[in-house]
Length: 379
Image (tube, rainbow, N blue to C red; front, side):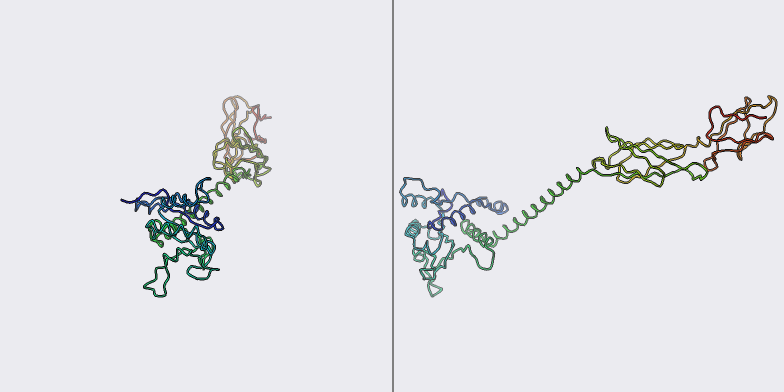
């Protein structure tokens, strides 16, 4: 039957290497294995925890060696933090011997934080004597039973990358995974996270930009274009009043001529692209009262009121009741009513501010626009 362990690993280290040991413990316990590996093999956990690190977990009043032995018995692996200082530690050497005595010689994982393994130089040798004794290095490769240490200071790569690779090597050994496959999966996951982080950063920037943009007031420029036929004899379009209504707020401006453009300022950008109420008025022209989609630049149509200079109406006075009148208004012959009322409409292209009126042999001038009581008296 397979044995159940309380800890994934027991981390053995010398006190001067405590910082590296604790860092390694936290890195392994916080590491989440790629989900695709866990789905492929349900026996692979998402996290490797807990790990036992006695400097953190030892309770006051307990016998040190007895406690360490008990924790080693409950640990699947023994991680030895190797350095020239650790190589001289009696506690670490005795711990290695005890772990081997439990029949777990092949479950020892050396992690090199300083020094050189199998150097036989007390100043640089990082493997404890017990480790070298159980895993001897021999000149003859066929008799070489040395153990490969995991170096957190791998040459040729950055310190951060070297530490990450070393941590993955430890994880791969504990879970008996292919290191290259685990490294590939980890890189793929990091790339996905980097892409996701970049997308989120862009999204945040766009959100901030949109928020900033939405809070900035804008100006709306409105031009006016006459849509009726041009007639140079009529008064030009002047003093054009424009009013824009946004909810309960109104913006107004006046154009001197059609060549000008109205500028309505400090309009909240949320109104751009939305329908807004627009009013337009000018003397002699039809008022415009409509709803339009608000844009930063707009052109509004304006057309003349055809009745102002085109609807001719007046009454003849002094005409005998039985007398037949021949009335000409400009170029148009008009038949007066029985009560002397003369009424006609002139097209915009032919409209004038004054029309010559001929009644039989009498000639007069009618100035426009006509009033309600406009009359021509025949003498």
